[in-house]
Amino acid sequence: MFGKRGATPLPSATRPASVAPAPAPVAAPVPAALPAFDEGLSARRSEEFYAHKAQVFAALIESIDLAQLAKLDLEAAREEIRDIVSDIVSLKAMVMSIAEQEDLLEDICNDVLGYGPLEPLLARDDIADIMVNGAGRTYIEVQGRVQLTPVRFRDNTQLMNICQRIVSQVGRRVDEASPICDARLPDGSRVNVIAPPLAIDGPTLTIRKFKKDKLTLPQLVRFGTITQEGATILEVIGRSRCNVLISGGTGSGKTTLLNCLTAAIEPTERIITCEDAAELQLQQPHVVRLETRPPNLEGEGEITMRDLVKNCLRMRPERIIVGEVRGPEAFDLLQAMNTGHDGSMGTLHANSPREAMSRLESMITMGGFSLPSRTLREMIVNSIDVIVQVMRLRDGSRRITHITEVIGLEGDVITTQDVFLYDIIGEDQNGRIIGRHRSTGIGRPKFWERARYFNEENRLAAALDAAETTEEARGAA
Image (cartoon, rainbow, N blue to C red):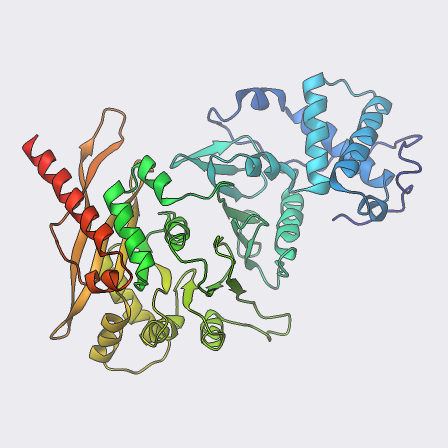
């Protein structure tokens, strides 16, 4: 937290007799234009408010024993801080409205016990991303739209302290010697920090938030991400232990979809997940979660994704799930898929199923494997059964645009067939994309035999028939 500066221990002497005024640090400039994020908050928070907050915070740190405070539970510590801050405001005779005092109390409690100005944003479940560009500018993404907020930090030092507090919880560090760090919050939200000297205008913090209530395939159907027939096909794919690759761009919902697909896994199966920052939250009881480790100060001790994938093969996995394939671990994952670990899954960045296979080939080649191109493509064909493509459209909505099978090789070309597609028709008067999911008319996909082996062929046939019937009805209309 913050360093102790010789204070009166809590809770025996929680009321300071007198408080010396402390100079206010220079606050970061307020952005010129703010959107309608919280107009009441914007109106209440003036430069004077931040000056008062800086004085009260400095006096508070001088008045408490942080070691004693750490022994209290969260609610008791919050009450102690609120009492002391109220006394400081009275002693300094600060002229503040009741609303400003409440804001001040809440802000300072968040600074000492939580993540400072980020706390109200983290509490909101409708925010998908939080992007802090230095102390003075914080953006959020809500319903696919990015907007500027009035949230600001006291200075870049406060922002850096909060970044260090976040990454230290998972045993990582961020400083001038190691200015780039991936971490996670306790709820699994993904965190990236890049600090000076690499970030010129101050520390940059990016948080990919996850909803408290995890999304499911039925919810994706309600949101229009996929139709009911498409969701059933995805469930059959998951239950039939097909090897699945989820492809998409940044922020398209790959990890969310991966979480949804894993819901179809039987609770008796042993699952091992490998991730750079653990964010998958599987509901099955038999899950082993593995996470990479960066090098230490001496540049030693690094554990890469490839190390994890190779090691998990010795842990008797029934399914291997890789959070994101981005390097030479692609080779080890394909080998695992091809040697008895059916039903393994992973995500990677690509704009189409065809590009996803090209990227797999490129990542294996970049790992130093000097294999003939045809050999690599044979490995991909023998390992990957289905590629699911997700896309974030220009209106901010997310759609599953392809459910594509990998069929085989014709010469040196990998052949695929689309089972389900999403067509963009146009847009409405509000700029929202209008589109439709459709079946391509494939009556018996390649994974039909696998589905029959797991007694899922009736559900698969019903979903494909329903999708075709819906398509015919649309055509007739």
